[in-house]
Image (cartoon, rainbow, N blue to C red; front, side, top):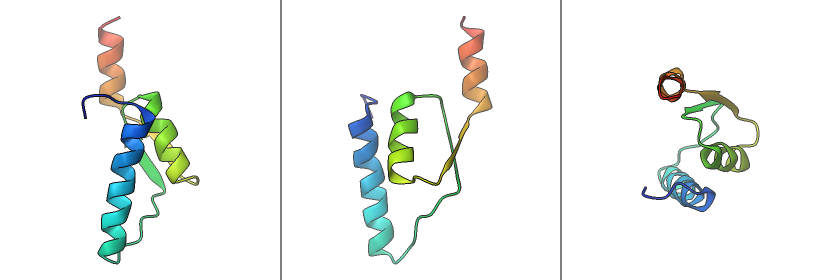
Length: 67
C-alpha cells in the first residue's frame, strides 16, 4: 500500500474477510499485532471490536532510535 489511510486498511480488511467467507473460514482474532500506525489501529478496531491491539516492539525500537 502506498498510502496508509483508514480507507486503505478498510479495503484490505474487507478483501481478507471476503476471501475468508468464500473459503468458509471465520475470522475472530483476539489479538492483532502491528506497527503503531493510527490508521491501522482504528481500522482493525472498527472491523474487530473485541480485538486487543499489541504494538510491535521492533517498530517501537526503530522509532526511538531515530529520535
